[in-house]
Image: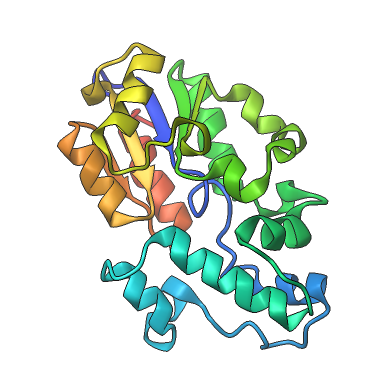
Amino acid sequence: MSDTARALVLDFGGVVSRTIFETQPDNERALGLAPGTLNWRGPFDPTGDALWRAMQDGEISERDYYYTRAQETGRLVGEDWTGLPQFLQRIRGADPQTAIRPEAIAAIAAVRNAGAKLAILSNELDLFYGPDFRGKLPFLADIDLIVDATYTGILKPDPRAYAFVTDGLTLAARDCVFVDDQIKNVRGAQSACFHTIHFDVTRPAESYRAALKHFGL
């Protein structure tokens, strides 16, 4: 392990878990929708997803994007969903482990075996997934610290969000490698002096390899 990499700090949605865009066929089957009904693909087809482009341009928030998509999907199945939690719990609630990236599990194990610390820094972990889902994910037992803005009320890229991690791990920011799929959050971590990886959800294995290099792995 290198002298400057003592902790791996991961976003959850998109980095640890696969995006809902990647699981659209499974989502449709779980909801009883015809194939191709959920035709918005976010980063996998930004030109065909105007709402995603608006979010990337800062016109709406990330939460606004996902809540809008959840409400649209709820109407398709004849239900009134107030936000993303109902969507995620319907498509992943029974077995959320199936949505976890195998690359994430492998990276977590490698960093743990190297003697480094692990943290999750999320803007909406329990808000989106519900507090009960954590018990269905055994690998979370290997995470030293989970900072969730569901409870702190401090969203990335606010500098205070990153400070929760360094304070909780009792490490300097320069000792931490932060991984997130949203560039604004990566820039926030850079401003806080973290090492950073802008996670590419279309190339997860490549992104994890880049992160593990900081640990000499």
